[in-house]
Image 1 (cartoon, rainbow, N blue to C red):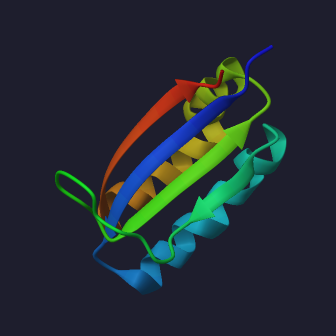
Image 2: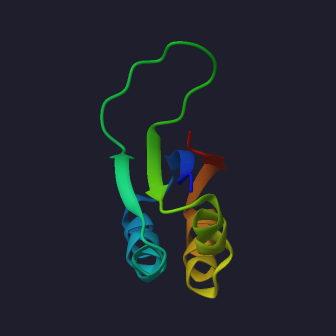
Length: 95
């Protein structure tokens, strides 16, 4: 079974409140077997528009990645994130 990956590009507007998002999201990530492969940090623009924070999260499957996002646990966290940050997120299937 192919793994699933969240790819998120984020501009945080309120770093203090973003910490609340991180704490609120943790139970969903633990429940669905998330492994962070990239979480912020330095990056190099190659093409197109960029955001300040880039995140890649691996899940055991594409379905686990989708289920995590749609879970009640994560939706509580997402509501916080949407108040304090601008983001694009996609789920992709691994090869």
